Image 1 (cartoon, rainbow, N blue to C red):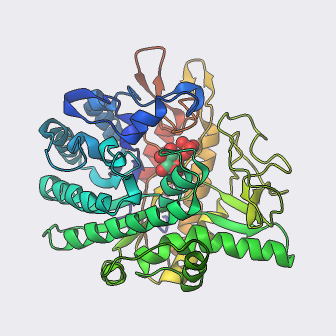
Image 2: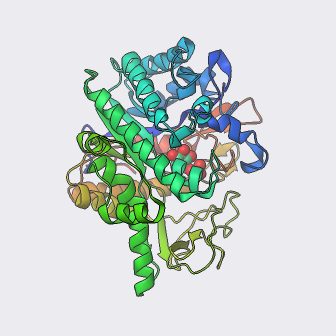
Image 3: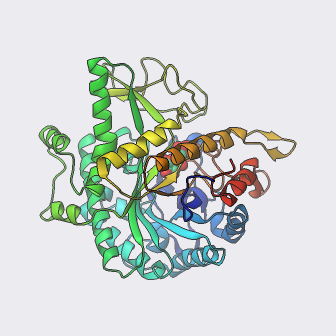
Amino acid sequence: MSAFPKDFLWGAATAAYQVEGAHDADGKGPSIWDTFSHLPGTTYQGTNGDVAVDHYHRFREDVALMAEMGMQSYRFSISWPRLLPQGRGTVNEAGVKFYSDLIDALLEHNIEPMITLYHWDLPQALQDEGGWEARSTAEAFEEYARLCYQRYGDRVKLWSTFNETVCFIGFGYITGGHPPGVKNPARALQACHHVFVAHAKAVAAFRTSGINGKIGFVNVLQTHTPLSQSAEDLAAYQLAEGIFTHWLYDPVLKGEYPAQLLAQAQAVWGVPQFAAGDEQLLRDNICDFIGLNYYKRETIAANHHESHLTMNTSGEKGKGHQQGNEFGFKDLFKFVRNPTGVYTDWDWEIYPQGLTEGIMNIKARYGDIPMYITENGLGAKDPIINGEVVDDDRIDYLRQHIGAIEDAIKQGADVRGYYPWSFIDLLSWLNGFQKQYGFVYVDHNKGLARQRKKSFFWYQKLIGSNGAER
Ligand code: BG6
């Protein structure tokens, strides 16, 4: 017997841009990722989502594999420009039908859909009008959310508005590694505020939609530890906690920004600027649940060097934490290699206890909020032995993290589901196809043929025993 409740949902996750392909099929409009990934030098070896793993045309085969693995829920995202090619206004009925058919196929197999409304693929048309820096994008998002509720709300109970603000705002507006490729913290903070406004508006619309379901927000759960107990490392650690956790969780779980950081940001940059009614809007529209994406812990140290904002996107171990060149912000903090840490080839620390700690920290700060682990997984170059994908490292990683979730449940956390990243090997935004996460391998040399990995059969057993057999 495991400690997982009987109705715990065992699932897996993907995102539209990373699996669908069909980037201009059947009336879909371009997204900012379609544009960005076609610019030279933006992604690993120029990879893009034009075809991805062609889930758009093969979703029935993929859903059959999900069912065979025993998945009870599937977290996927909707491509906004597939439904609304201009971001608002005219509806592309062929796009609406694609997700409608996908939802029906899932339900036929008793797989509960969990929809993410925004997993980074903003319609290019809205970017051309200012993207998240323009408040009108928040209004367009509400229109898009209402469309999704109308068309899918009769069948879908679990919804989240946004995936990982820290990534699409942080990389989009601070490091410049994601579209729109801006490097300006003040612009980042205002864009981020509009995301919170968009979220709150979509939650408000959900609550009057009559849908018998729940709506949440998905954030990166980044556990931090200070490199040392020195006063300056501790201060750097507190700052990282404030930015990566409190700034990004408080507005959706408490309905307000952390007061001290807000005052500091407004004093230094004059942002975020609030429109009349924003404070009330945030307060009135707190999430029903929080989705947590956990991959790694970061070890934090004070940083006196120039800011360095690039990361390991090649999978050559050690590229990520070269001394003196670590990812970090001058005079604030940097991410350093933990001397006792175990790292992946992309220099992500494997630290399962961090998941227990992170869940318990969320519970301590926000009370009894229901949680779903909406992503967790190992990015690796999987070995193929005699034609079989033997992803033992992934099995180990997942086994340990499932244990960490069970520990949190035993300590009283209300965790309701687990969605490993990812159901199938897919396109990593900046790391191409070589960084694999899936239970299902896709052979790019054999017309994107699907193949079950060793982890597929392992997860199948685990689900069958509600987490006991692992
Ligand atoms: C999360 C995203 O940040 O991490 C996913 O929600 C992403 O879309 C995943 O693929 C893994 O990141 P990466 O960079 O290894 O693909």
